[in-house]
Amino acid sequence: MNEITAITPQIKDKRRCNVYIDGRFCCGLTLEAAVKYRLKAGAVIDPERLAEIQLESEKNTALDKALTHISATKKTEKQVRDFLKGKGYLPAVCDYVLEKMRGYGFIDDKEYAQDYVGFAAKKKGGRLIKMELKAKGVAEEDIDEALTSLDEGAQESAAGRILEKYMRGKTPNRETLAKAYRYLMGKGFDYETARAALSAFGDTDDE
Image (cartoon, rainbow, N blue to C red):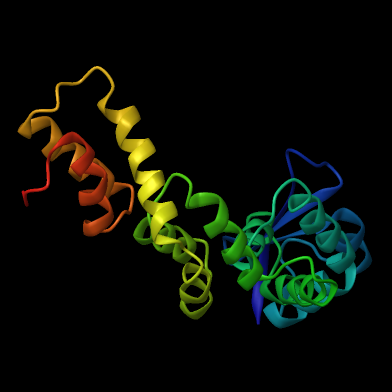
């Protein structure tokens, strides 16, 4: 059992409050739920019971917030979970929301990875795309499957466009091309793709 040490109104939403357990922020709740379940500073409560209260009273509100969050652009499961955690929702509520969204087809990390690769490949190489998808919480097997759609010719074309823009106004000497090579590698293109792009400027030697 743990002690509720404070319940304070939220600054951005006066209809909600923050609940602190043993001096640390635990979760957010509606004021209605806090009153209904007689939560107050000094009261002792099991954290699991608090999670049940939040799930019962706020699961639909949390789902609405998550759906609004993905309305503009697609999100991964990790991104939605991080968003909900940032709003003060406990793991039980996050799990409920994600399960519902998966069931409705509103989140699909495999589909997200495929779409992301299709978009990002116009300006980034496969290595960087993979790193970014990992950071977004996409499973490695879903990333690898999505990356199979990368066309070598399209990647060379993308690297060529990026390099052409980078080289504008620059003299294509060895030092500049070495920097250009590192620039392309930083964009996630592999060695062969970077070299193919650089060959247009007459540089095919290893650095």
